Image 1: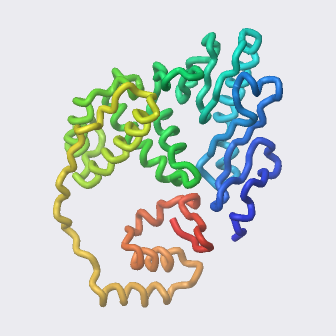
Image 2 (image 1 turned 180 degrees about the horizontal axis):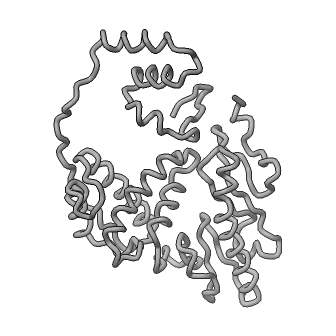
Image 3 (image 1 turned 30 degrees about the vertical axis):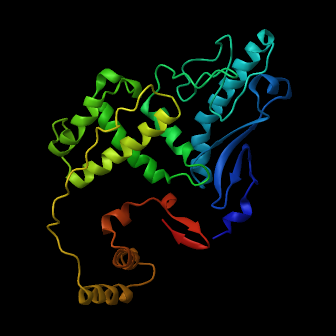
Length: 296
């Protein structure tokens, strides 16, 4: 496996707007702003992490990001003759255009004037935009794609139960949050009923995304504040393996061929305590290299 730290700041071959970044070789979009528009946009370049070190996955994710970049550039180009003062772009995606030419459909962005005293929430800020904002808040160590998918599933179940919100975070009320754990554990929304422990995980994901959205002023208030109470987890009905059983599993696993996936699933399961199903379902992207050691 290549040393990913050696790829830091290098361009992705064949993709001029993609760049490896950070010690783990994650890929980001890096777009050079045309010289004539830098005074309007307030940046020499626009940068956004893609949350993966896989080139093919990064290319797939980059299409939507580059489309938003083009919207920024087109809006700045259209509005530039009407600008006397430069606008700021403090941490993309954020854009200030004083005459309001920027398309309102770009949901992950806020309109912000220079010296304007904070961001103004845009109507239509969806949970997908909130999820993207949460990922961006993790900086140089973004969550794995598998983790993002889990958070998306947790948010999706909440918003599927609340069709009146149209997926918009600002329309969720404290009562919606208070009622959600009972819905999760009873399955009254038509989805599968889950345990208290799993419900707690759902609510933790939801709270994390709402907390970031509120902190970044994309929503007017955080409905998860003082409305999420941790449910008591039921006592486990299954007992863990004892030392002799662990020894037996390891001995049998070592008898298997090194190319047999069962060998590694059993060994990793014994060491980590993870379920075999969880390990078998993991994506390649869940495996990272840190300090030269493969981990997930």
